Image (tube, rainbow, N blue to C red; front, side, top):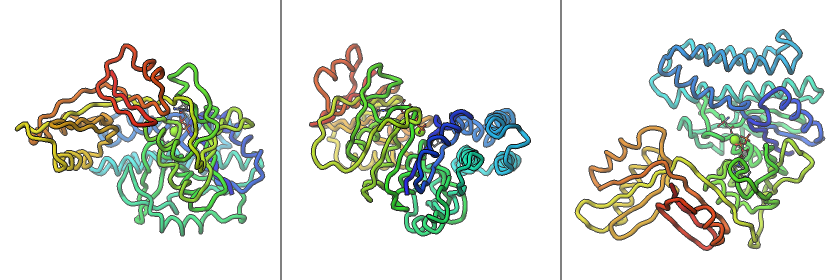
Length: 416
Ligand code: ADP
Ligand code: ASP
Ligand code: MG
């Protein structure tokens, strides 16, 4: 069995869904197909969640945009509005019902109860379209078998429960093709959870692991993993082969092409991950697998925006101790901060963090009770793997460098 994952760009409109069917039709294999929300639907649903939670009037308008976007695509795929399968309209109706209920006081919980409808509708659309194109398949609501804890918006998989339930649900060869959702799961109490933004790649890897897939392929709008984001760098080269380790380092540093959690479940079972273009399905793309020798790679450029540098120093000019570091990290961890670079001197602890959407000032105020805290926002974290002096010069020319860290293979620079 192979796992295929189709992301937002690959199902962004009716032509894209037809293209997905043409790719699936090329494979006679047993398939588990994981689908993300169509195009930018998750961003739209995020605005809907905020509007619902805050009881803003715009919520009806935003819902209408969500509904009409999907009905237009479904109308094109199934010939007319009257022919749209009831499964699809029922899911859109369920969103409307949810909006008619007053929200609870828990934002993260409310977020997860609405946001996953992007995946539920798109996967149903793909499943029904494949069916109409002669590719028999079974649609699965993944919430029935992918169980998680109840950390809404960033749930962790309950591997034991999920292993049993997933294997009871995806039964090959009873059906040759299954279609399901990325990104979502549910608690043991059947409350919907999500695995974090961009989490559909991770779902594909979880299912690959639990079902012992022969391979996992994620279909993207790029030829594979490149040495930089082609939207930011004019000249890029395809990396035909990567180790799991290299792919983890790249994606953890911010290469958005694959969710960083994707590699571990596949590495643990020795399952290869292919990254292929849904526009050029004949091209080999990138293969990520176990490689024991050192790969000589061209410099790989990764940028991460919205970074902040925080500098902590004790008020009484004493050294930074391990207790200080532990204190600072405990507070940042409780606020779900992500730390991307750490540097310590005698009396300073410097951290580069993702700037949170809201709340940086209040955390700084809290930390200032114990430490002097200075911070700079609006920075970019540049990571260059397999760097050369020339490659560093190219990226830092004319920019102010706030923090720099080098190891044998990687240089990290926080720049303005
Ligand atoms: P999906 O449709 O599966 O959600 P994403 O949009 O998350 O796909 O990921 C694909 C995008 O990742 C590409 O369009 C590209 O702009 C971006 N990207 C960032 N870094 C890289 C890289 N090193 N190689 C290829 N693509 C990259
Ligand atoms: N649709 C979700 C998101 O945009 C999950 C994903 O696409 O991977 O974050
Ligand atoms: Mg994505």
